[in-house]
Amino acid sequence: MLRQEDSTWNPTNWGFVPRCTELSSTILEKLINADGGDYRGRMIPCEKGHACEFQGYRNKTLLTVLGHVSVKRAYYYDEECNAGFCPKDRRFDIEGTSESPGVRRMISKVGSYRPFDPGHEDLYELAGIQVTAKEVERVSERVGQQVAEYDVAQGEAALASNVIPIKPVPRMYVCMDGTGVPVVKKETEGRQGKGEDGQAKTREAKLGCVFTQTTVDKEGHPVRDDVSTSYTGAIETAEFFGWRIYKEAKRRGIDRAREIVILGDGAPWIWNIAEEHFPGARQIVDLYHAREHYAKVAKICLGQQKDKMGRWMEERRIELDGGKVEMVILAIKQLSTPMVAHEEICEREMGYFEKNKERMRYAEFRRLGLFVGSGVLEAGCRSVIGQRLKQSGMHWTVKGANKIIALRCFIMSNRWEDFWEHRALERA
View 1 (cartoon, one colour):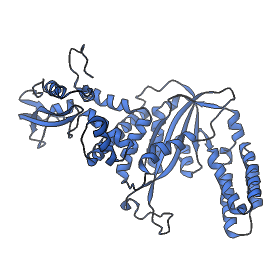
View 2 (cartoon, one colour; view 1 turned 90 degrees about the vertical axis):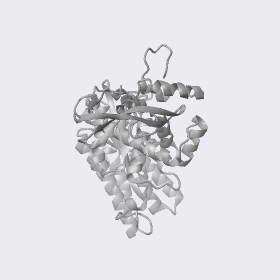
View 3 (tube, one colour; view 1 turned 180 degrees about the vertical axis):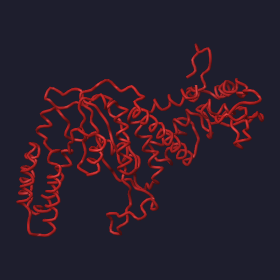
View 4 (cartoon, one colour; view 1 turned 60 degrees about the horizontal axis):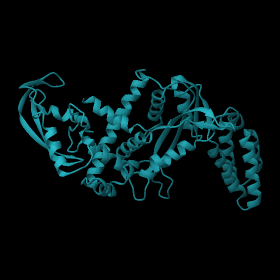
């Protein structure tokens, strides 16, 4: 932001100047070009150390929050690389783009919240920025890619212990879940689906969140620390996602957490990641997902006897809440009927409870003041993924979806400002 007391003008801030009059656009253009085009002499080295020769000046028309301006730039050519460049483009963060950093920031944030078509109308109505829906898509995906690369760099730094972790906390929670994202047909070739034609229509986006807990309330219920939740996710294999969520936990300072808790819905890939990347962590199956499993049995076996079904489910709820998983298993076994379909479902659900019984000691978990539900992540799947990527008629490529997921994870993790500050400092 321009301030009267500034003795020098900082080019990393010019994209955020408040919108005012056409005169301001003219003044901005003069400020941008006050350096004479950033001429640095007849010969300068490139990043590879080659000698690059000055070839003259080249103007670029740039869209800023004040309108279009013309930027004068000294152009240098590298004969060895057979490529030219303008040093001013990097300093002003306008390499390969015709939009200022401030405009890209506005476009990509709109693109992360709104479909691209109405998004470009919003930009014009609210900020007077006139771009096409395709430009909103292009800029949003490009910034999303930059956000993803920045996230990878921060994760690698965390693995190398080059970051200062947050202050110690009693507990850190790592939650994981998956949700389907509608994709274009080429992204599902050879994949089995649940539809009548057997063709998959979606790809699973894996989402993780990390949050901390310091206290419990007067009733002993756990209290999530304010502004402590961060998200990370992508459409990728469990192997890649395992490293993704681990690096996010490292970035958040998991090494200084006194207790680590993994929350999930019981999917095998979640517990495989827990065993590989978080050995020794306490594992808890989300209580509400667990309830769905005995409810499935009740609906199949007792669906025609509503009163009996209700009583049976209430008894299982009390048992499960008390951590008495063996009693739930026994009740399902006793309910099993000779009908093949019923028997198969009962066997499958008994196996689910048997395999996860040590992750379902809910009475003990509550006594310790632990969360037993992954409501934070359930809400995250809806807000991070569902609200933007699962609207009617949407079909994504995996690359495009992952770029928008990266944007939304950063915004909802309160890391959006960090990303733009990092880009500005890189070029200062």
